Length: 468
Image (tube, rainbow, N blue to C red; front, top):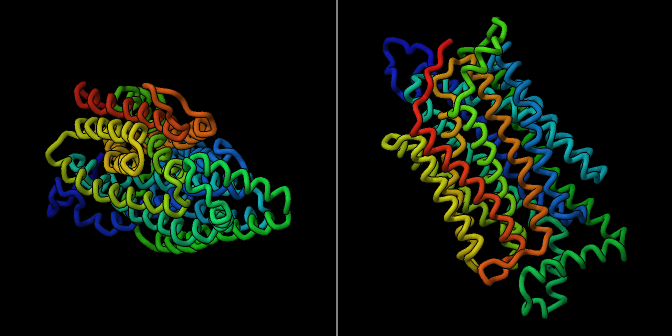
């Protein structure tokens, strides 16, 4: 799915010189959607306390956020195929800004469901951006270096996610008055220091619920303040996104990808209906589900099992993201020496081991295991993407890309299920009691099993030659 290189460029160069500027510009988008993902994840726990809802209900934040991908992935691919990658990117940036700005009326009205609408629209834009940017990057050079090129671009995604995490850790979570309420309750009850963190967490939530009944005006003031804090990063990123949109409008981009020929559905299905592509969509669904669960519920893990504040727990999420970013560069280098499927399978096995450590190991060692999962996840998304789309023509890749972006729906489906498990009572296993938060991480274990199978099998079975 490459374009013919110019005579003076190396056909196997990761980013040929003639594509350097558009590559840099499109790569900046990876950071933009990374910011949106990770400034939103901590809101699952924050909204749990601000709106006094269950973990399962607050997980609807992720259902709305990642459900937008599922809704818009295929329409985005059809628009991109008819128009161009550039048009897809510009539409995506516009929807991103609109969704982010919808948090203003949501905060003023203090409506949880209105926030869900804003996140849903915001991810309409992200669906356009990811459906455009991923295959666009793959097409900017030789097919032989396509997976390396996408991994290089994806390596900049953690810069956005880290920024989002820093904003959440240092500007949002510490400034929430519900956090101040929790600390005041701890100070008023010194006996809490002798109790299990999971028990204390329940008592603090109960105290907040009681306060909403005994002093509804005071609780409403807390809610209004905290939702005002939540609005700030979304308004700020909307301004940045509109600036990037202006840059794309005035930049000349190569290979618009316009396609006037009608879609030949039968031929497209024949090209896509194989283990590498269909299995890739399935593996990507489980990967995104695992990623969102591990990054969203690390806050619950730290607060419930270790007695941390939300900001303290989120700081450990930042450590996880730094590890994720460093590991992605390392694993991109390893692709020069290892086959993509083999490396993917090995990383998935590492993810299984680390997740089991988070389930069964006590104290900070368990948390460190949860953090370590990020090293294993670092290369999974772009590697699955590259394996699934390898050998597709550029126009087939636009529609094939939609299936892989649709797979982000895993992030919408699995967190609410994990939230329901966390709302439960835990379980007895091998003669010991596992808290419900620990039990919930068996879901990511299952996801990594699926990914490992896909990686090893995809590398082992021959790829069917795809012809026009």
